Length: 349
Image 1: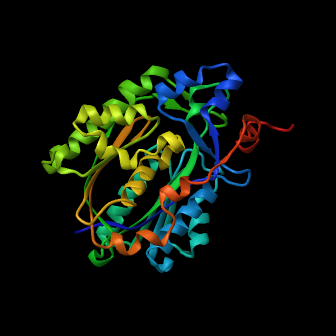
Image 2 (image 1 turned 180 degrees about the vertical axis):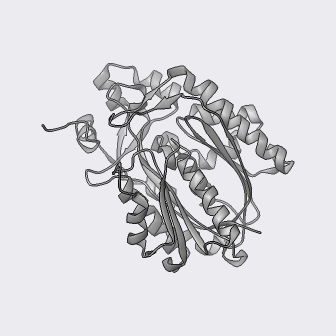
């Protein structure tokens, strides 16, 4: 059965902080950091924004972009590692906000930065089985990084929602297939009650990111008997600007293929929204018939790959909601003090 993306929507807070402003506080060399990370600035949530509000905005854009009746949505799954409640689902808040309640099923997902794509896979299965008409899969985060930690330079805020369905006349993009590669690799973690995650430093690259991104990507292309030149675009999880470029080169993809979706230099790492943000930015620019190869990565660790073909429907819905480029435009820059206040790094006893 054909299954794919009926609609999509993104949300990025307007506030940003430049790498220089973080480096100045900790005495780091901003030029070296920017050259190494290939990130110039990152998004910062407003004081009243969290994963739930970001997920709601992305979901509303996805529903309005295609003019959907939200009552058709039978499943709402929100992937994040920064849900505002330890016990209270984000997904029920989203379902109520978009008018999908009473929804058949709702749950929150967690698998580091690939929780959103895991939600897409789950919606694909439920739609294909006939259990639901439409599924809403969201990847959203207000990413955490301890003060002075390397993560603080990239941990950003944003989210993307995808409506998954199987009526061919409604599909803006067909998901041809998906493939996952997963192992127990503890490269990144946060224990219950701890405010910030910890990481294995250099081990987050290998055997974390590259083993799983390459494993999932190669498995996907072997499954479909495709190769990099069969695709017009490629998107890889974007913890920084260096890793996706290196992964693309290792797999045989070109800089031109990944450039449209490589938003991390101006956005930072939106964790569960990272790969999905790259897909959304790419869909904003595609033409009917274009093919997109995408691989998400989540620490812990695993990779989810997708092979996507864009349909004529993309031209009917694309301009009905803000594009990623529009969301990145006109930022409001914060200094470190404002950033710390917005992120809750300053706590009043």
